[in-house]
Amino acid sequence: MRLINVAAAQLGPIQKGDTRDAVVSRMLALMDGAKSRGADLIVYPELALTTFFPRWYVEETAEADRWFEKTMPNEATAPLFERARSYGMGMSFGYAELTEDGHHFNTSILVDQSGTIVGKYRKTHLPGHAEYSKERSFQHLEKRYFEPGDTGFKAWRTMGGIFGMCICNDRRWPETYRVLGLQGVEMVLIGYNTPAVNPLRDAEGPSERLFHNRLSVQAGAYQNSAWVVSVAKAGIEDGHHLIGGSLIVNPAGEIVAEAKTEGDELLVHGCDLDDTVFGKKTVFDFARHRRIEHYGLISEQTGVIAPE
Ligand code: CDV
Image 1 (cartoon, rainbow, N blue to C red):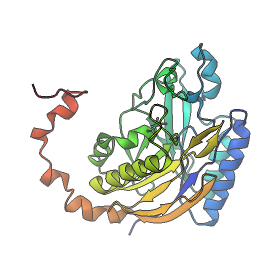
Image 2 (image 1 turned 90 degrees about the vertical axis):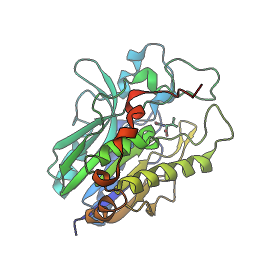
Image 3 (image 1 turned 135 degrees about the vertical axis):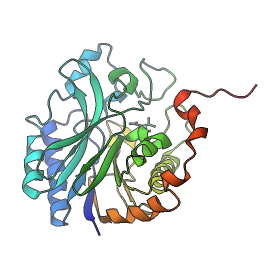
Image 4 (image 1 turned 90 degrees about the horizontal axis):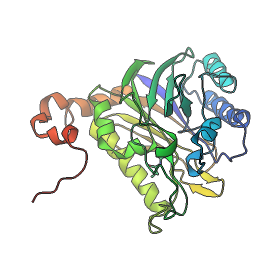
């Protein structure tokens, strides 16, 4: 048995005017709660330190730099690193990263139980659009403020297992989990900010979005025989509704814990990393069953080319 007690730390809404310090205080309160429930690892959502700023259009993108972190850890986040280290707790959270040479990424980090950043992932699948959109009832400007990530989907051996990360929209793409699965990933950590409605299609509302969240995460877990911990920033943020529905899913694809609120909420579950072995040695024993001679299109072609 290789037990890791994981805390999915869902955050409720963060308003435009909220300071980093106020957010970090809430994150620390969740970490204290996780400690009292014996957590070894705490997972926070995408862009955990700020409001979901890609919903706001600014003409000069440099004005959006105030939402970005130039270093990590930094003054605002140092208390998270210190407390996690003092608790011997691993940690993962997302933030907007501005690199020294001026690149902008939607990033997540994995911090081990000694407080060292052992993994960094930059979001690959950026949804939304780059210019102001009149057709939408609200903006989703990730393509304006971020570049597609340059890290790819890497897995890291740490904390007694093999861990990978992806961010929000990445969770909807089977390629994400499979690239991690091919590195033997045992636990995938995901953070998300998912608007409760589609700005182009009124019919797609909160229950459908929660369904797609479960569907994607459960499929990714099952098809790669890995634990998946998927954590929301939720609730009414700056007047805009984000779904909750944070999940911990086992390697059989079953939900073992699910958030009930749209506020700050902790899910804690003991995950045995050895539970990944059965699926990896049977139905999803990739080395025995995959037929890569038929998968070429997946990496050769981006969009659909229908038969004549
Ligand atoms: N932050 C995101 O990546 N959100 C997308 C929305 C735009 C659909 C998501 O996949 O949840």
